[in-house]
Image (tube, rainbow, N blue to C red; front, top):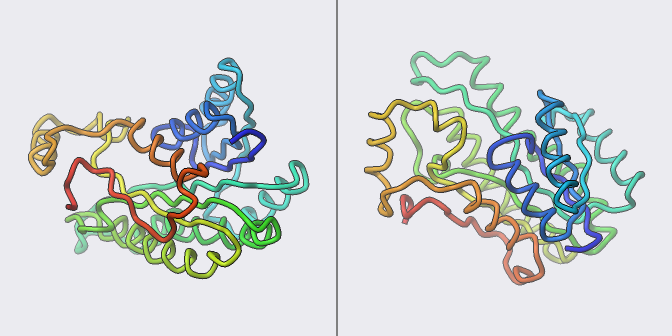
Length: 245
């Protein structure tokens, strides 16, 4: 991945952070996109730089169409090309459908699904000009199986799967690979706050009987971003311990 520019959205923590670190390890120049915490994003950049890699932090809410357009234009103007896009930014606002507010439904769709549309919409033309690129969208096992209490989240992630397959068909003739990763339960700050009872119930659903690690997702993303995956497109790779087999 030497000299390749990678944009990772929502990269200040969790899965996105590890994907940024892993792509940088493999030689990519990483743009660490974040929306909230500049300090956390800078910590990711510092970690990459201290390990001998290259990275910069870039604040932008990918749910905003015009701001995302400005970010992509700025990156292309500054670096000349963007070779890898990892759409990882996402939020949850869980509730049963009878209690879910319209605002909570809309916010999750806007960030998780429309955020993917916004970045691809504004970067696709540049990748077409380059006649190459790798787009990796982070979906979820919830988008494959559905999950009670996550109507908004599951719908957004199922939408990402449909978007991935459609973009793969539209962009394949230009040498652009578009794939998705559907993580299952992964140990992050979000899962660490779950009660022991919820964790035990979750593990019971997993054939491998354990949560995944952020490295499991990041290594899959690095593979899809590499030339080793040049003949793979339009796929959804479940990294879920067997939940959706």
